[in-house]
Length: 409
Image (tube, rainbow, N blue to C red; front, top):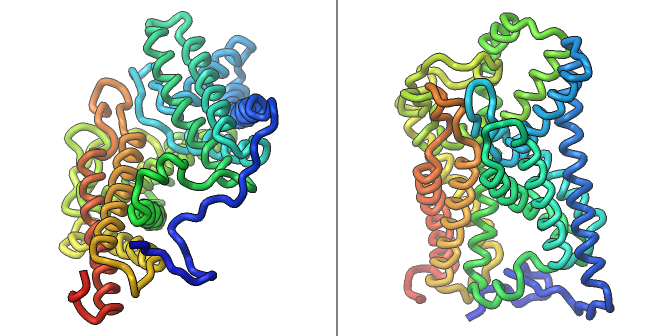
């Protein structure tokens, strides 16, 4: 039984794009080229931003031409680290991804694809392949003169480029005028419409949760500004160093937003071995001299009241449930339809949160900072459960109000 509204102005789960035209000869090749060109434009722009900052820092320290070349190599390593490719540094291998750099790369590809790529699947394939090939080449070039294995670096560069470039190009093509539908045709035929609706509702709940995490991070930053100011004063970076330091902190800000989500959900996160930052209790240790880390919550943030903070995550799930209910026909919806929507909410929120937490964590060398971030499986599972409870309560409550009871199946 359909669960979408039947009126002309109603919201529907999916609407197929009207009247697609058959491609002209050579159109598919042109689409592939347009996607590849758009992806490479975004790649160059994001790398240029990182390289400019690295060169600015080098010039500020009175570097010569050789040092400038080294700065360009460091910029390439940081740029790849933002995609998820580990960086070999003086402290060891760094795997914590500065999500700000990754987000910048994804955004530049998104904008470029939205503006200049053909709105076809072939263009997405071309953009993904071109971006992955470029990141693979950069990763292999950076292994020259090091002990790193080119084969492993190539695989990591290929995977990282495929994920970031593919996501950016896909989002840009989907947002383009007359682009393909939000769900591929083969997937649209395979998934129930109510499950697709649940996945979208879960995406809405995840976005809301990230917004709450960002707001909490802002509160932490205000509360810890004195500690952060003391760290800045001790570093004495100068105006050029201050600019570079500020940008470096912006690159790590999305990581802290995701860690705030883990703190809200309950499991919390770590910044070093034998440390724990959670609403139930905090066990802190020595931290790197980075001002933004002065905003991390101390023991005074843990209280009996904080034990109720997971209710905020449940509230985000309730928002997702409300989003899903708005696209259902109250007179025809069944309890099984609501179950499918809830499953979609749980899957979307849990998988998205787990992947983001995995991307935001890692290691900063082999020592005490080998454990940084949250447990992605645990946090993803907890968020999925909490969001699912909120969505189920709203959907069930709305269904009961619409039908007057539990009589209808």
